[in-house]
Length: 248
Image 1: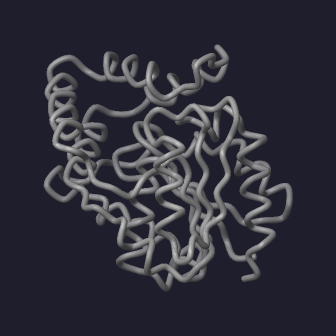
Image 2: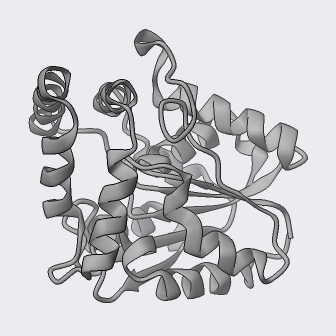
């Protein structure tokens, strides 16, 4: 099995993948969980240079240097946007793709306006209000206190600069829906049954756009947008089932 690269979401870092990394490593797999620029321990890129494409170039560099040039790549939420940019720029580096709690369309004008207002608020007041607002949207209807606390801890560790840059990059990202029709690699789509951000209907739309519907779709019960942390065992099982079908 080729190395597995897992790309975190916003505003998180590689720690969101702790359960998946441990699960897969115990089964002898080489798992790489990088921090994107501006998150975790990574210095932000200059604001004008921050984009999904720039993040994708960083992931490509890691795949070349640490994975021998080719990997199975998974992206969660914003990490899925990065994975899409990677597939467009460097398709040869991705042997199979896992889209987790993500989507391929670009921001609507309303969503883009919301990001810009959020950037203004973070610039003036810091990240606390953004985090509290997000926590109210990304968890299942009845999240466990421990998971909610862990998600909040990771989010609170992120810099305002990294958050602002990523918000701008997401607001400016392109629609990648057409990319799905061109991919000839194994695809996995994972969605929380209670995801209000990238909903099950969005996941079904992604599957429909894949070549001949040739994508494995798994819906995770009792999970919102944060499925890998809310229901790690179910997400781990979905990833393993997918990897067992990938002969590379």
